[in-house]
Image 1 (cartoon, rainbow, N blue to C red):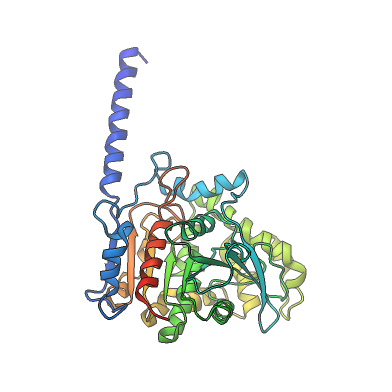
Image 2: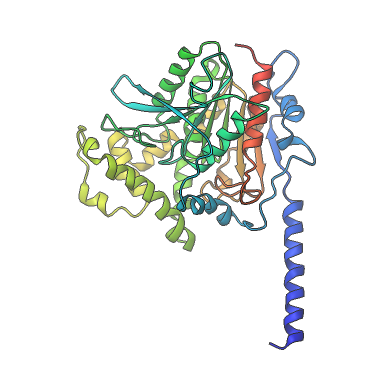
Length: 397
C-alpha cells in the first residue's frame, strides 16, 4: 500500500472508531420499565419514587448509564473478560469467614460472611445475601466486586454469600447438588440468617442462575417473604431459552460459552461423583462421559437426580418468569440487551409493566455479568448498592 493510501485508510479507520464510540455513548442510558404506578415502599414513597431519587446509577440523566470500556466494546469481550482475568488466578478482593449449615436432609451449605465476625461482631446491621451463578461461589469475580462495594463506605453492610451444595469448596454430603430452582436450600439459608440476626433487615441478590433461583423464591413466598427486597442480575428468566441460546451452532458457542460452562459443571460432577452415586437413581457414567451440551448434562444428571422427567421438565418448572406475578416485595432486575446467555426476547417486560412491585433496568451493553467500565471497575455493584441502601432506609423490621 502506498504511503498516502495508508494514511487515508488510517484516517478513515480512526473516524469510524470515533463514530462507533459516539454511538455507544449515545445509547448508554439505562432504561427503566415498571408499572405506571408502583407500590408504596413506605407511607410516602413508591418504588419508582425511591429509584428516581436515590439510585442515580439507574435514573440520573448523567450518571444513569453504562458505557462499556473501549477495550471491551462487544458483548463477547464484556462476558469473557472475567474468565480471562481468572485464568491468571481468582482475585482476592475481600475476606470471608465461613459458616457451614446442615439442611434437614443432611445437605451442607457454605455461608461466607464478609467482613468476618472477628472484624465485625454480630449486631443489627443490614445484611445482603448474595447467590452465585452456575457452578460458581463466593470466589467469583462478579461476586467479590459486589461484596467489596457493599462493605465499603458509605454502605458498610454485612454480606453473606450462599455457596450451594458442592460449590466453592463445600463438601457434598448428600447425593444431590443444586439447581436453578432448588429454592428449599436457599429458603433454609435465609431462615437461618434471619434467626441468627432477627433485628437485621435482609435483601437477597442473585446473579445469573442464582438470580433465577432468588426470583423464583421471592415469587413463591409472595407477601410472606422474609426479605425486604431482592435484586436479580442477568437473570435468564426462561431456562430453556437460555440453554437454546448457548447451544445455537455459532463459533462463540461451540468454542467459548458451551465449553466454559460445561467445564464448571463437569468438574463439579467429577469432584462429587462418588457421593452422587450413593443416591437411589442410577447415573449412566458412559453417557455422562460423552456430554457435549448443557441440556445433555441436565437430562442425564440434573433431571434424574431431582426427579424431573427431562431437562425440558426441569426448565419448565424452574424458570423464574412464571413466579414473578406473585412477587410482593420491592424487586429490581438488571439486564443487558446484548447478553449472549440470556436472550432479551425472554425478558418478561409485560410482567414488569403490570406488577407494581417490580422495576427492570435495561442497558444496551454489558454482556453476561460483564458491565466493565474499564479493566478494573464494573458498573453493576453501584446500582445494587444504591438500591439496597434506599430500601434499608425506607423499610422497617
